[in-house]
Image (cartoon, rainbow, N blue to C red; front, side, top):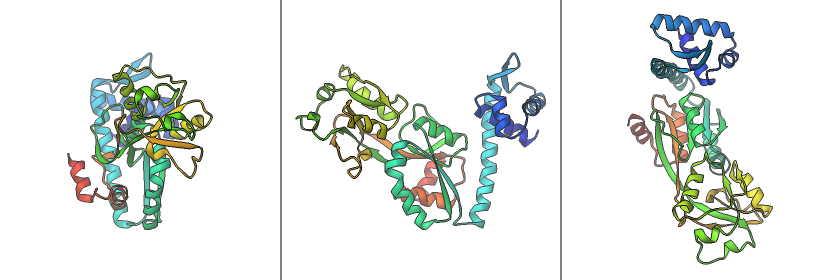
Length: 306
């Protein structure tokens, strides 16, 4: 049994069971990967992957267990490297953050700015996705931290640090009647076309659920992939939007106004997520506390053990 065989299993799974894509990512050949996985399966005495006409189509039941162990093995290898780096270069390294558009655009800039003043030799990488995608990035080891709201499925292998609530506002052109109507109700909002987020963002569920529970049908002409695109179409007069309050920037949204709607829609919780098995370098603890001052190293470690 060799580490490269286990790595091949991980990469084939990560590439959606596409051996050609895995071979390209690992700079090797498709036959080499197939042969090594077959040798590992022969040694274990069972198939890791299900195959149809020599094509990998998924994991077998024991293959699912192999994948979990393989993820732990390579996570521990990365942890060993992180321990070495932590003691050799306390102020230098790389931090990869998977996050949503709203957090990357409106919440993280001040946090990253403050952090880099303290750690100028730490390189930060930002990866963007919806709440479920960023958790998958953490689970697969692509990123160190995920910062976003609730995902569409659970991730038992991730520790969760709740930080703060994201409230919502109605966004409309500055002279739109929805900004002054009293009281602001779901029925009043439903009189106008609503530009919504796509279905893979937690805020969209909570917004639509509020209307569904009241039996109110919305006119949604189309959905936008992020807050900035939604605001662009609001500016064109194509509808109003219900967005995170933090996504309203008075300096850049001169022709738009926001009206608090937190009494109508459930808030979302921004949380920091990371692998429970991960070794966190000291500057990662400091980044977490920069974003959420109450998240001391002791608190973070308690969530990691739970």
